[in-house]
Image (tube, rainbow over all chains, first blue to last red; front, side, top):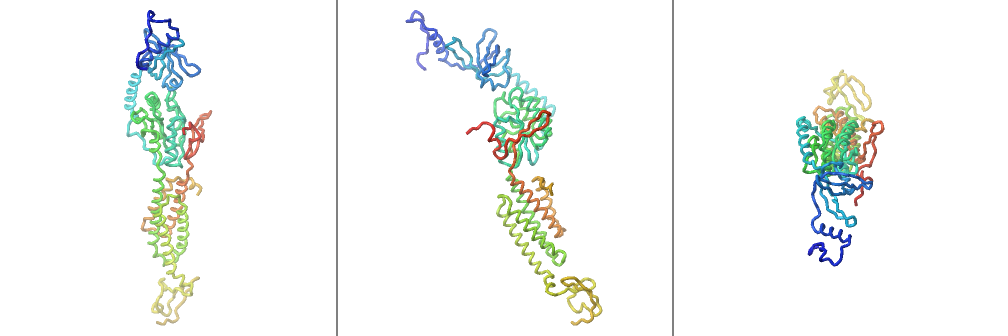
Length: 410
Length: 89
């Protein structure tokens, strides 16, 4: 509305009197012609929270006061409880109420004026805990190599748990996740978070704990700067990953935790190994197992002479068949080269098996031939080794006998 | 064999690696090699069963009146929280 700003016409120039409505609207026009957004400091008095959730108060200083209102959505987001007598800093809009003939500060943000004091307390706590050794890198516990149950301490309604669940289950749908629902901002948050860390340790059935929340302002994250949370993390026997959704700032919890993740999703990536990696590793080991076994088997081929090994041959065929069935049913991670190598192996084994079988003397003996050996157990191949009067052992296909040579002819 | 059903993927893999180590020995008899291979195949089956499973659960941990722990199942992999919380499509 550029052009002439509203101005009240003086009595001598006015054609008629202003109505009261026109007076109030005139005041509104004057004020709203300029910027109405202000940054102010004052003391709270007459603070009242209506059943609707909206808050009505006065802000004052030594000389003056002004009515103010804080709507429910702003009031609900506060990190502290406003009280009469508190010094606060606000961002507000000046609003004129033409019906009532008054103006008011419509509060968008409010924080305790002592925020400077909060920062001093933060630095002091940080130094104290550091001196006690809570931040010592040497005492940070390594995360377990495999997390099969993941503990999470955060708000059930928040974005953090959703991110963590999504990332964790996509990396490994076979793990379990155990959630403890806590407020992650507000006055009771620190105490409840600390208690949840203790409880999860008492429960014990998780391999690793993620403590965190999504992004927010410094006041929103303040619970994670509280001493009680820091000490609970330090005391935890189960490794703790802090995931406080602030990429840049570090809270005290981040310093104490065993691992600090920049976001809840990153925490889930750190905690949970990707199954795909496990699958590849397993398949490599499976291939190695069959390769090694085949080498052993090849080395043992000399044992065909030893008849007691023969049962082993049929056992091999059975076991190899079983192994092949196992790999046939392996989930789709099975890669072609492994299957090919295994198929190759089973064929070579069967081939070796049948070659050994063919070379085995038992086939010959089944056709009626016997093995004659001398007293020393050596098989006799020529008549010169079987002289008259020698005792010999005869091995038939079924059973054996001993005999004495009556006559031998070369 | 009942306890083996509960064997974790990691433990089965570790034992498989031990068996591979055994099969590298020069002095192994064929029957020992067979035994080891047989065991190795059983372990392969256990690992495979684990990798095929996709039954991870999301549970909430609560405390009962006497301070005992209660697990409340909220959902299972992969879309555990779809029924809960605000829908934002």
